[in-house]
Length: 246
Image (cartoon, rainbow, N blue to C red):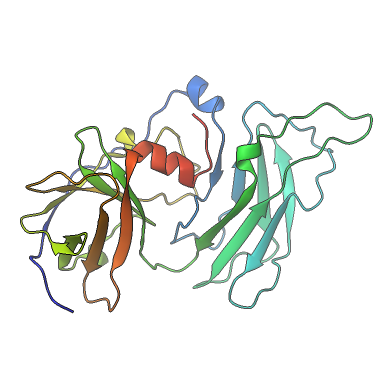
């Protein structure tokens, strides 16, 4: 692998999301988001349903199904309905260093029950990882038009390494990496057990256009991370990864 010019990471204070409670209550999303890593072994899966208030005893069999992607086995657990949210709690916690897929099925109304309209965008399958593996989930734009990378978890001091980048196969020199404050891309106040993630933006001599394929060598990987720059805001990309509405 040919080496490119290494970059400098500018460490800026990452501010916590501080959306107002009234606004936050109107939003819907899933947690963890699709592709998130570093998930605690006791973290509960959550579907934020917004204004859809299911009765506590409403029958919701198989609403959330979880599969261990290493052995293909279904993870036993229970589904709990609470105010404006639904949770999946594994019977014995998550196994460490594993990847899981979880599927949310629409809630169908029962005969003679309350009329329900389950948000269609919340249904689907996402993955999460209980290992500390790091990856890039996508690339989008900040308000300044810079390309920003959405990482699968928060970066730590252990992730400090030489970084090399190319765009459409051309090495990019003189790149500065800078944390994007969380308030700039996260419209939610996350649950205490959600470790969250980081977004890093690239300041480069030239502006990248949407559709540019960005490759990132972080440390000494055999295969770089690869992301096609989307022509949307980085906040919109994170919303999509959470299957959210705001």
